[in-house]
Every structure is written in structure tokens, then in C-alpha cells.
Length: 348
Image 1 (cartoon, rainbow, N blue to C red):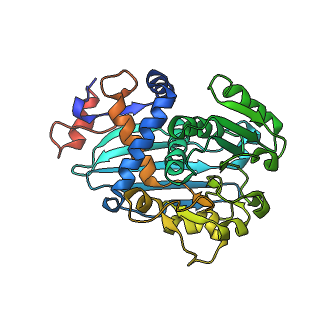
Image 2 (image 1 turned 120 degrees about the horizontal axis):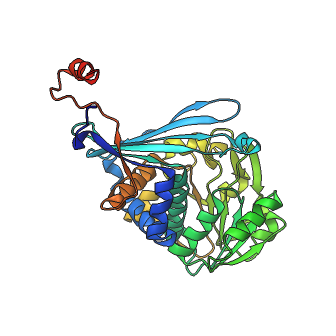
Image 3 (image 1 turned 90 degrees about the horizontal axis):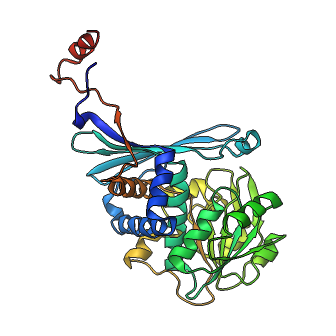
């Protein structure tokens, strides 16, 4: 058997290994470190190639590719979104990603990203809230208690100091699941019977629902002055969560306007409705929260730079550990011009 050389082996992080890595570091620390890594890349936003994700839509869901490069490394994520999967006992969202060198095109990491996407989404939400939420915020309403909810709550705790979460889902079983999973988190957890009940006393509202439809999870009268909203459930055309009147009263912050206007809450507004890019707030080029009564809205659809950050974080964190396996992914003939010869010798 021909043995591939070390230079042709690509580190691969499986789901099991990703879980091992997270437990090895500790989820709160992972969320804190990943939020810092994402913020670091937002600070160098102009250095990245940026394009709306390449989407293939169907009546039941979407499959997308999310690419970007900073000129040194290139990264992409494959991700799907199929709300009906839950009825078949499948994940709504699954993903994997790759990081490669720009100078020679060789991959340096292949990783699962179903779990990693949930973690990076939560870290991004918390990073945004740290810049936009009212100072001293301690209570968050989590509306939609599916696969994202616990990560969102724990990220707000680890990064922003949230101490109380109020949970609501149209499915009481989902809320009960989240209550169980957060029981040992140190958070004060309240299960609520309506969205209105959930936002009582909250300074931060996070919405994360799954149905692919124009939905109204929050009506205008539910959102009071001074609140911060993380709207992360509206992430494809025809899928929203907020009444448009909320948007008109809010200062809206987005990742990449060209993508958010297609997929985010602001698809409900005029194409020229003003928004602020979050990286500009982080670098000080634009204002974030300017007064106590301002409603701030992070209309987050997820962007490739966040996945790039997550992949480079994992690449750095697996170094010197056993939480990966070398994958024989690349052909490596002794003579780069003799690919056929390598195949022929394998028969022997």
C-alpha cells in the first residue's frame, strides 16, 4: 500500500472530536474565545472577499455555499436549512466547512460545522449584543427554543453577563427541553407560556424560530424603548420573524447588507432603508447605541466571515491535541506531473 506523505494529509475534525474539543476547553470559554476571534475578523472586514452566499432554494428548504478569503486563507461552508426535517427526526441545519491556503490551494482543515455553526452563531449574537445592548442588561427573552436556544443563552451569559433567561416556544416540549439543558448553567431560567410573557422585564430579546414563512413572532406593541433585539431566525428569502413596524422604529445593524436585504428581516423594507454594518460599529467608524431609549436590532443572517473565524479558531485549537484525524484527501505523487504513475503503482 502506498502511504501518503504528511504534507498531503488534511486535519479532519469529526462531530465526536468537535464535542471532545469543546468539553476539553469548556463551552463558556469556547464562546468567549470564539466571540473574540469573530470580533478580530470584523475589525479587518475590508480585507475579506465578500459575496452573498450561493443558494439553491426548493419548496422545502435551501442548500447554500458560503465562501470568503482574507488573501492568506480561503474558507467555505456547506450548509442546509430544511425546517421540515424535524418531523422526520433530522436536524434542520447541517454543515461542514474547509479552510485552505491561498498560496497553494491546499486545504489545512476539514471540519464538521453543524455543532460549530450553532456555537459561532451564538458567539456572534453575544459579540453584537456586547456592542449594542443596553449597559447592565441581565435578562434575555429567548423566543424559539430549538437547537440554537441553549447556545444563545450560554453565550449571552459568558460574553455579556446575562443572569436570567425567559424561554418561550409554541411547542412546550421544546421549552421543557431547554429548561432541562440549562438547569446546571447557573442561569436563572423561567419557562413562559407566551412571547409576551417571555419579554416581560427583558432588556435583550433573541428570536430563533424555524418555519420558512413570513411570521410575526414579535408585534410592534411588544417591543419597548431601550430594548436590544437579536433576530437570528429570518435567514432566507420569505422567512421573517418581526413585524415591519418594529424595524421602522429600530436602529438596524447587519453583517453584509447585500445578503441581509435578500434574506433578513429587512427584506420587508424598502431596498434603500438605512442600515449600519456591524463591523463599522466595532471599529468605531459608526455609532452603535447612542441613548437609553434607542431600540437596537441586529438583523443577523450569518455570514461567511463568521464561519472563516470559526474554522481558523478550530485549526489553532486542535494543534497539539488528539481532537482530529489526518485525512488522506489529496493526491501526492512523487512527481507532480505523474498522477497516472501513482495510480499504476498502487496496483502493485
